[in-house]
Amino acid sequence: MNDRVPKTRRRYLKIAAGALTVGALALTFALRSPSPVGHWNSAASEDRFLATYDRAFEDLPDPAETLDIRTDYGVVRVYRFEGAGTSTHPLLLLPGRSSATPVWAANLPGLLTIGDVYTVDLLGEPGRSIQERPISNDQDQASWLDQTLDALPDDRVHLVGLSIGGWTAANLALHEGTHIATLTLIDPARVFADIPWGTAIRALPAAVPWLPKSWRDGFNSYTAGGAEVQDVPIADMIEAGMQGYSLKLPQPTPMTEEQLRTLGMPVLAVIAGKSVMHDATEAVATAEKTLPDGTVRLYPDASHAINGEYPDRLRDDIADFVAKNS
Image 1 (cartoon, one colour):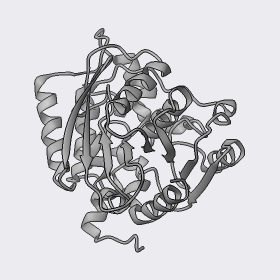
Image 2 (cartoon, helix red, strand yellow):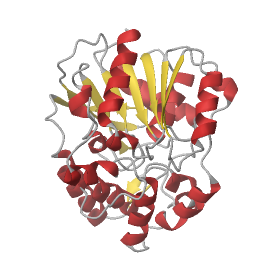
Image 3 (tube, helix red, strand yellow):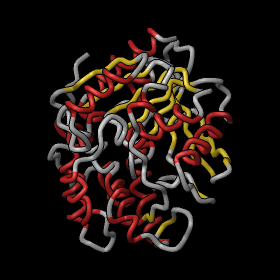
Image 4 (cartoon, rainbow, N blue to C red):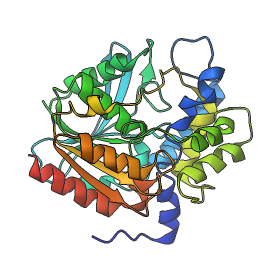
């Protein structure tokens, strides 16, 4: 399939995964409020984010169903999109940091040819999920997601995670893998290699909510390979979430080779060759060495905004992977 899209749409898509991880690993934690749960800094901040969320959501297909699933840690927003494919199990997509469901705008049309698709707004992140109790460790992170999957009518899903969503998906597989048919990790953060110091340092000013918007835009563009972020719906949503929401989540623990070797389900690892979130060569080597049933794909020219840059190639790789493991 052809990955080329019109220039104006390509601007909008390339930023899709831009600001997904590092803020929570840097100054955000030093600046967080005494509240034990993630929250909006003000009513105006929430209104601003939701307006950008709704604008970005307009570029998605209409969901067949909207679910608010109660867990021990809060209410999780899930959308179901009705697909035309024949996959035995639906796909379930986890976005990256501050991006929520609209980050999948470029991908949903293609993925719906595989089968039904669920999307989740991560709990404790900007979005329409509402955190009500503390999430204190990796087990808590796995528990809220496992409870969400348990509430769905499908017994298992093909779980797909992007960036920090990739870490969240892999973390679930390590703790509660009952509902996972296959696992797809798209340029996951802190799974196969750690975040470089240079990226972490550049994230520091982006994590300070009262600094100018241009500082957050600059970091978002950096993670997306220099893509333009002005007047881009998804970029506007991500920046509004970074500026207006206080995260109260634990830092994602880097995964060890010993842990990765315990992943028994089929795993597709897609690594962006120009990602600033890890050393791509190291990530590929670790994935190939450790995954018992792994398929590793390197996209040499992709940035961390890989899902917006290569939607058709991702669709084909995921479709082939799911078909072989259904």
